[in-house]
Image 1 (cartoon, one colour):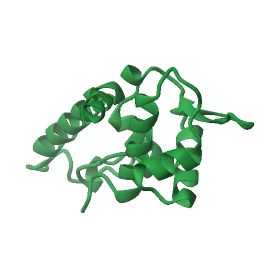
Image 2 (tube, helix red, strand yellow):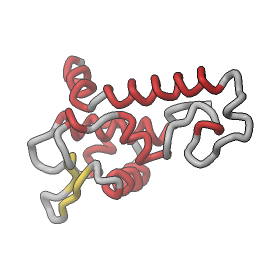
Image 3 (cartoon, helix red, strand yellow):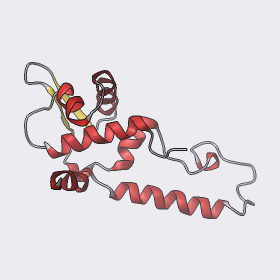
Length: 138
């Protein structure tokens, strides 16, 4: 099981690309696809999802394209994952609305809940600006 699926990895690449271009002109989907080794069709679908989630904004026209909707310091990995693949869940019993009849008596419940909180906390701290800084060092 992959916690971060392939499409989410591609979306993350696109978002880091936009973060590294934050404050400049909008970036075309074609440019993102070419720079990040993503098929153009998939890049289009991912950018639509990210736009629907409010993580990017689009502009039309010859100089159109995409830009981050907020400062890269304010966008975290958890938001991107949720936008592309849905909530991260360590176990089905921890997923929203998927409670278990045995949860109150489950010996693993406390440990799994702790792991869930740790993962979510870590992903919230992983912001695009930090990832962009690392990308620029290459």
